[in-house]
Length: 123
Image 1 (cartoon, rainbow, N blue to C red):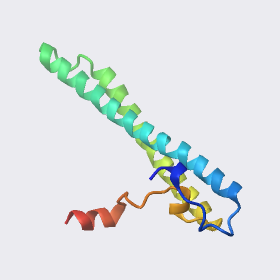
Image 2: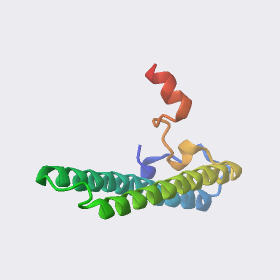
Image 3: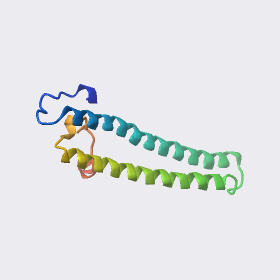
C-alpha cells in the first residue's frame, strides 16, 4: 500500500499535519535504508571483483591487496551506517507511537518480517 493511498477517516483525534509530516519522514526513510543496502551490495561486488580479477589474471596474491583491504574497511563503515539507520528507524517508531500514530496510519507496512517472526515463519 502506498503512503499516498492510506485512508485518514479513522484518525479523528490526530492533527492532519502530524500525519502528513510522519508520512513525509517515512518517504525519506525508506529510500535511505534501501540506499545503504544497495551500497553494501555494490561494495561486496567490488571486493569480489578485485579478488576474482587477481585470480583470473594469475597475479600474485599481493596484487590488489591494498585496494581490497580499503574496500573491506569501507564495507565495515557501511554496516556501521546501516546499524545507525536501524536505530534511527526504531527511534522514529517510538516517536510515532508517542504521538499516537499507528504504523499503518503512517504507511509502515505490516508485510515486512522482523527478527523472531521471520525465523519462526521460516521454520
